[in-house]
Image (cartoon, rainbow, N blue to C red; front, side):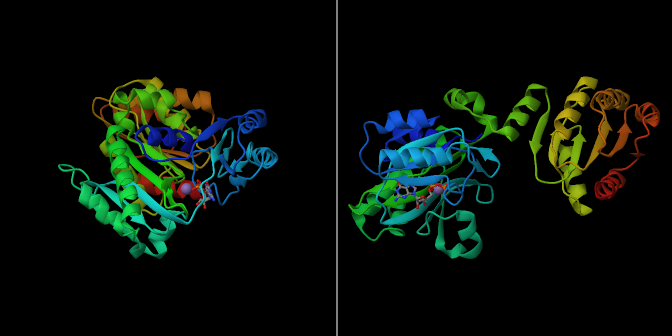
Length: 377
Ligand code: GDP
Ligand code: MN
């Protein structure tokens, strides 16, 4: 789950991280009202669940009420990487002497939360990681001790020569780590963290992602959730008893069992293809699930072929076949589909599918190769 910058700012504030004040606005009218009591420099910022808003023109400084209104008119309704801007914040603008990067991620290799800092703030960190990885300093936090005072200060000293400034930054790192733990984050980023000319250290942007599997114990996050299109699909799938994760490829996969779903994606990759999703229809024999699964799968415009890979154990292949026939009756897609059925009632299932004219194969590798071939034709 992701949240907007303004929501991250609210969480930062609650934990005492210094953040300039902001007002959330949904219309130009609201901006006019918000600006009635403001007579200093503000920054008008698009609130969308993607990064790089600055580059896209979604972040504008405004000196006067008229400037702020003009910026709001330009930004509201703007398209940023496929997201329409429906709300903006008017934030007190910070005077910036220098920008820094601070981020926390769950690092599976070191089995720890990793704190990353860089003096190359403001730009996208993925870019820095590619071109100048040595400019990012990484520190694996020991979960037993947490981020200790001296550690936080030493890390801050990599960015700030002045001890007073480093202390402010260290305090922010520790608070961000506490937020990370308390909210079951998978990413918490301040980019940029800034130093002002009067030597204050402030957070002026915030990005946070949370572990979906921990949301059951995060009622406050669930209450502020504003899912984007992909997340909505994933939530919808979950409610229907399916596990669906959208990916970037063009081969849709429908599989029973998470392990088989992983193996299916590996198989597609092995033969040079790219999976469009992870989709586990689970272990039950319910034709409706196949209908739901096909609907979700085919709603992804990138899908050019579908590979259905069923290993019948508790799941009965004839049930899957029946579900598929029902689904195709309703959906009527032109997208080519290859089916591999094996295991419980496979013969019955394959016999049922004969009438549909769908290509059926006996092994996973054949199915993967066929799906890739079909996606190209
Ligand atoms: P992003 O592009 O989506 O990451 O949006 P940011 O909030 O990080 O803003 C992009 C850039 O706009 C920052 O790196 C700053 O250079 C500039 N910016 C944002 N807020 C302020 C501000 O309050 N004052 C000033 N002077 N510049 C700002
Ligand atoms: Mn940013």
